[in-house]
Length: 123
Picture 1 (cartoon, rainbow, N blue to C red):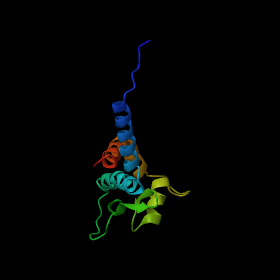
Picture 2: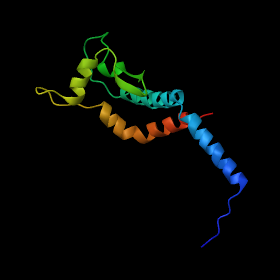
Picture 3: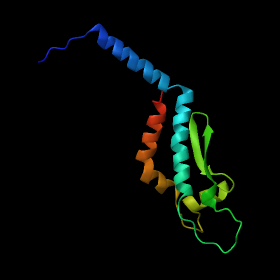
Picture 4: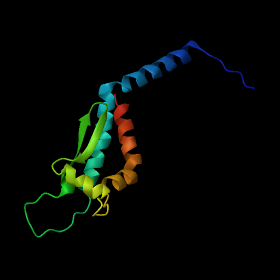
């Protein structure tokens, strides 16, 4: 079995790491990290293809997707047509689901996690 040598320098580095994690885990930094991921998800949903319309001047439901900060979380959803967006995402008894938020999250979640980690440990 190899011998492990514990030095004062090792403890100092360990303490520095703990302080860095504590700083990163502050409520303000966590909120910023969550917003970074939420805003990236909302931007990706807004880029999804929209059906063609003959009526001009109407905002498509996907264009209203935003990320809003809440207490210790971020809510990504539809700003103006929120009630209708949930019907489209999850379906109703008369309409089948046409999800767009969940598949976009599933496809890009590793990128969103990486964005949140980068924001969390930014100095």
